[in-house]
Image (cartoon, rainbow, N blue to C red; front, side, top):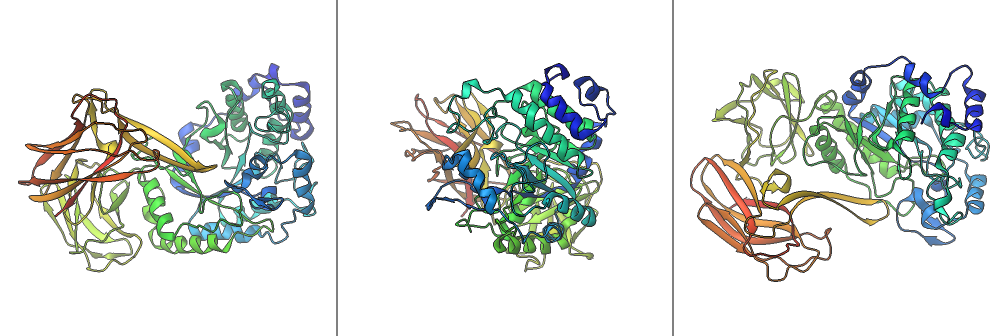
Length: 587
């Protein structure tokens, strides 16, 4: 959006609180620039952040007029179709008198988080800071009469965390020209999003960027109606006001500084560009009193390692109550994660995507001269096989006891590390390898007898019409799931192939994991491994979210070597199956 398209009202708002700072499009383009990679460096190094969803919705906490509403807490206004005239009354009772910014920031710091992203304004249109643009804010409209963002800014400065803001730039259910509220204003086709941007969104973004000191990033969300020009204007505006401030991918139209994954989405393979997974600690984002389904410390640590091993950041959410208190269940999980991070944070901060192939016992992270092996499943025989390292390994040690070297041997390109029989950490024990900065790695999967060998769909090569597709489904508002499947196995020419190596001969039981939301009819499939042919059929599932496993038989591997197995349809048919993985278990 150029300066000429700003309304007169929007320009008056600019000058009313931004003094002599010019906001016109040409002035934004001519402002001092920072190299994009330089702007991203802190983000790439940080790896772990705290998301805070907090607002008026924390008071109803998922219930309205005696009825509990499914879905996420911060969408209660939308879920219950609450008229603005009624929803605004919540502000009169919203008094988070127990909010302690220092406690929140200290908890984040002790958990090992390096930045905090808090909702300055969510879809309900209520500002959680002292806004001069709209009186519908926590200082002017509630009995609390204080600015929690100002308190957070001071605490973040004290503990060395970056303060960042969430801002809903497109949806605002309190505004007739914004996207989302179809119960107060059903005629969506008559909305003027630009008018809303000029009069509220842009002026408020300027406020949060000029009132609280240096900001790490602005986290925009749900770009439903916004066009490329409008998205790019917001990006340029942020960079003009704070050149070092990042803009996330949900500003819309691929205009941000880094990629934002779907809610709770973790990609299957590494991504080179900077990216982030926003994730819930329980089911909801905003506080919901009946949601106590908190993830375990085990789950959180494994997800953190999974995301970092693929080059991303983990933005983990907490939802304070209407009193301003983080639920005790969240606190206990984060404290346990912090205990692990206190010992193992070196394997998280400033690392990059793993250089090793798939590992059945865990994952790995890297930095120049080091590989960190995250062992989720400790080997029963005390021998850890690390496949594909062609380069010399200078030293191996437990990260928690670097002064004690572990015995290492080589078997071809496979490193074998002798470990204590008992894992030092029940969740994730980390071994650090000292290696040359320029590594030679063979990423081919290696089958291991002591573990489940799950050959994922994303590892397969496809031919014919067979293809890898990403699937996304939601069982409830906000309850999102993501996966990748092989589809279109319509004929014998449509094939998916997996390549792997073995260290020794052996027999393996073979199971196929799939979903089939449509009837499969008389279609037959076959898995081929050398002269072995294992035919099988599939059953219909309820939908793509239901996954079934079919045991199709045994294959015999004669010697240590490189092999290929393939999966295809026996007959011509419009395939309805989605293959998630082929799993091999040593007998």
